[in-house]
Length: 235
Ligand SMILES: Cc1cc2nc3c(=O)[nH]c(=O)nc-3n(C[C@H](O)[C@H](O)[C@H](O)COP(=O)(O)OP(=O)(O)OC[C@H]3O[C@@H](n4cnc5c(N)ncnc54)[C@H](O)[C@@H]3O)c2cc1C
Image (cartoon, rainbow, N blue to C red):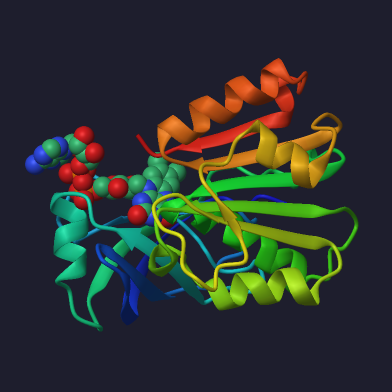
């Protein structure tokens, strides 16, 4: 199911602003790839030695074009943000096994913070596109403000139009007057309110280390075995 990574050329074909410090990129690949949701690509400018990892947000049904959501950090991402459409990058893809489907047991619970939504967006989009309604998929997604939510309309539609997908959005720094989601950080109370029992499920978490470490403690204390808790920290 996992294919060997290929050395490719990736051309920026779309670059749009999402939120302050976050952009959406679409890259056209020099050769089609077959990837599994949750995998990432390694990118660098020609002549550079060091690669930078970015999760693929697209569903597995995409082979020639991939969508990325990138938060500006330091040197590489600043250069990428300044690069025009048409820029060519060296790309090694696909990589990683974050949401390995062979390890899923019971319902799947995804917990994302900020731009950490990307590998989990790939998972829910794949459930939609491949009609994989074999279990229930919960996505808990926390952002500071409503404008920081990546693809709010799409996420809401995914939850409303797919019987197996439930999306819970939460804001930690503002309370818009028309907000019908949750407020505050994702915690045990919020998880239990929606999920009931926390055991018998597989958890995938991606986002700030603080969110991941806090949730890991909650889940292990609640009796979720460590092998059912899969995390991807970005440093
Ligand atoms: C598997 C995986 C998937 C990922 N997916 C995504 C994704 O989908 N979207 C996304 O936005 N990111 C993602 N990341 C994170 C992304 O790889 C990094 O943000 C990116 O490589 C940073 O590159 P940079 O050159 O801009 O920063 P770097 O220069 O590489 O800086 C990285 C770190 O170096 C230190 N540093 C360097 N310069 C300074 C400075 N001037 N001041 C202070 N500290 C400094 C900091 O600790 C900083 O966090 C992912 C990471 C991994 C491992």
